[in-house]
Length: 102
Image (tube, helix red, strand yellow):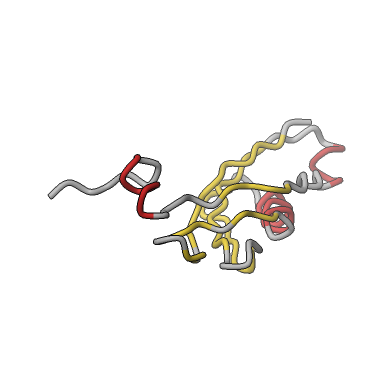
């Protein structure tokens, strides 16, 4: 038995869908890092709730804790069309890399 890809025609026919980003709030560059022209990146893992909000987000990789905090704060403000399973909204786990460049 082959797993069905979330965006395959079979998944769409069953009413399955990934969460879709509707509104993105940019991260605020930490002032100290910007003043010192420090670059960095963060890999954020987050849960899109059934109502399209993000309540849980964490930095699973970060070059600096200040960048991690800024990335988490912005992702928690994002809004989504929630993922679907058989046409019903479900919580979905996602990851996104954010890069900070002065």
